Length: 185
Image (cartoon, rainbow, N blue to C red):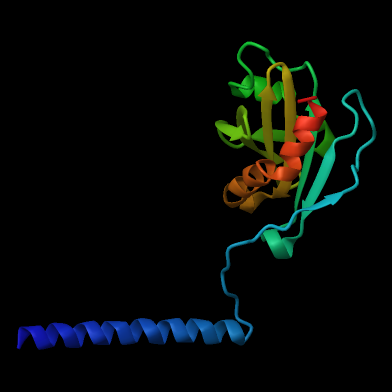
């Protein structure tokens, strides 16, 4: 008796789960908002900034439809500008290397930075708020005394969700091959 009751409860629960899944599927078909995980599609775009002492870098964009919000990443090398002994080991060195002058507006750190790895290089990433309601991730990593600095500009409410996608993109073949060529490796 108890066993048949347990089986009946299990079937009832399974039926309710199927009904809920079906109603969510139908809601998505009727135009209701359905939460999905973004699948970034990165496109290289022209470097949008005037030439300065660091020269041109690489610029990439991910549309809101693919990333949940528009994301722009600007990457460039700073040859011989990194601390040769410790690399990008703390937030002070990360801020010294950051390219916030490119994005305009006042920036303020939103949290402490954390260690990251890009290919064979180690570095640091930190989130910042920009005074015009955007946010930015500053990412710097080094190979010996040479640094690669990336600045990702995105919607303020998406930074936590998108940081892994930005780091993942930096770890992709496009950026790693460019880094090897630029650093003469």
